[in-house]
Image (cartoon, rainbow, N blue to C red; front, side, top):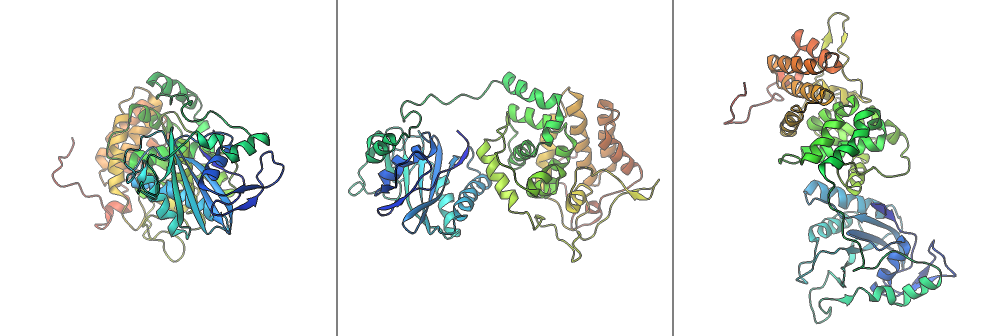
Amino acid sequence: MDDKQRIPSQPSAEEPATASDSRPSDGPITIRSAEDILAYIPHALGDWPRESLVAVALCDGQLGASLRIDLPASLRPAVLERFAGTVARYLGQDPRAAGAVLALYTSEPWHDPAYPPHSAVLDAVRSSLADAGLPVLDVWIVGEEHWRTATCAAPTCCPWPGAPTGQLRMGRISAEMVFRGSSYGKAPGLLAPRPTAPPAAATAAALEAYRENPDRWWEPYAFTAALAAWDDALSESAVPSPDRLRLLGVTLIRPALRDAVMVSAAAGASTAWLGSAATAPLRAGRPGGLPPALPGGLPAAEVAAALDSWWDGEGAMRTNGLPVAPGGGVEAIAVPVDRSSGSPAPFTPGASSPLFGRVLLGATASAPDWGRIAVLDRVVQALAETEAPEVRAPALTILAWIQWIRGRGSRCHKLLERALSADPDYRLALLLRRVVEHGELPAWARSRDTAWQRPTGTADAA
């Protein structure tokens, strides 16, 4: 089942009303209760939702836009914000929507009626929907054995632990849908156990196709999934898992992704995604489908949520605090020059926007996100230890770029020599070495307001 699905148009949840669905039907279906909605959902999806949230818009006596989406794997604020924003945007596309109901399907135990499972997810979604003008009228938790409202903790009106989940399969709506020829997958309690994470060898094997053919990263959805994995890694202080590191290393083989990673660290993933030439086909006209769940990467639903978040920046390029001059360019631009030709140093081939290239050149008026750049430094140092030259060369070049934007030309030069020992023809290392040998420093390093400051109490590495 897809990580994100829309449900066909359905009848009302609040009061008896009718609508036609896109499944086999002989006429309208009447919905009178929460149980009716919950019985209808798996027929509309064609499967029983699992570790998922189903959100349904309410539209003047009818059910409107609806969405099923996998629960997020992380509770980090940025992930929850993207997840909740995705739900609100989908439901908000229905101009008739006046409210919403939520059904959360999970096998996680529910021990206390006052503390439903995945409450952080529910709170984020309710808040996002409220901001969109769609108040949530009810929330139901559908477990393996029972289902119950999450909006009432009083056992007198809402008995604990709830109604048997099996009744949803045997009620009036299910009987009517089965009579009309509808069916869906296994009911709760009969579901196969969740697959365990693949072994390291399996992840490495799955990534081999990308290693052998880096052009596969040029596919816009694969590019997006890779950038989302990097954004997640750059938002965490902890070292990524071995599988994640394997993925991150392989992504650097593609120069366009390498450049996007550098821009993402300095100016945010939205700026990187909107500015990369690799994502131009998506920005020109979003094709059907969903981003893949890469080996060692994020679940497809989280990638889709990130894509929706970055997509919102289209038409007004997000600068993440990097001010834009009245003429449309970034202020205080200082571009390194190739003195042999008098032309700007050509090491921004993956850019499709001026901002993307200027971030790579360290030439924006405001300071970059030095905190994210420090995380990039730690992650890429681990990747630079790999024996594969196709990973070591870009990793060492990124480390050199970090030293260059920090104003440390000699350290940058040493790292570039190491990168060129791994791959003597590595283009970005050659171009950056030429810039350094000409004594060029980025604008960031020349201004007290934007220059990197070594954290207090840290030793200077040799």
